[in-house]
Image 1 (cartoon, rainbow, N blue to C red):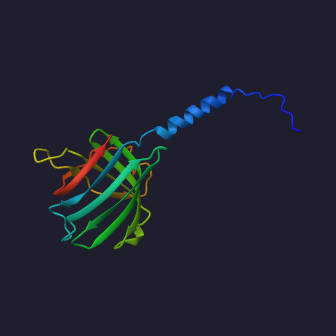
Image 2 (image 1 turned 90 degrees about the horizontal axis):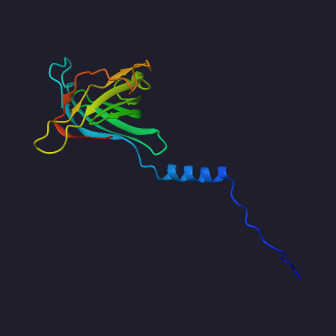
Image 3 (image 1 turned 135 degrees about the vertical axis):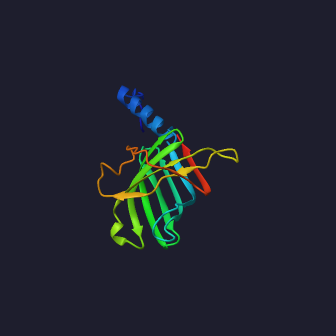
Amino acid sequence: MILFTGCQQEEPLESENQNLTITHETQTRASGPSASGHGTLTFEGIPIEGEGFRQFSFHAREKKNGSIQGSGVLTYTGGVRNLSFDIDCLNVNGNHAIMSGVTTRDNQFPENEGLLFWFEVTDNGEGNNSDPDQMSLYFQGTNPATYDCVNDFEVDNYDIEGGNIQVRD
């Protein structure tokens, strides 16, 4: 014979309720800013023949936990140079995004692999009546204080000739 004498429900501690609420808010938080694009650029006056024509593709977004995830490819079609890069810093302000990270592959200059990079883009809208989207050059170096997406060097940006850039704040 088994005898039950009573049951008592425990009240959760106040701090347990707070933790449950915080966890729920974190799980329902939407992703943050993003930037992505693809297209072509032509730079007149580049001294190496063919180096002035470039194709690019990139994507970067802030994940729910606040980290940045992204990558891209830059191809210098005349020189048959291909760069790949990982984006780990994204700074979005309206229709303008600055990205930085690490060059992961460079088929012509493998010594550049591991270098830091920085570039910026501008999304000028959609449709035939919009100005072309724009992109800066791809800058590489070793100084983490310089190659950081919090820096805005206000460098020249160039109209892309094909493709599209999307920046979401």
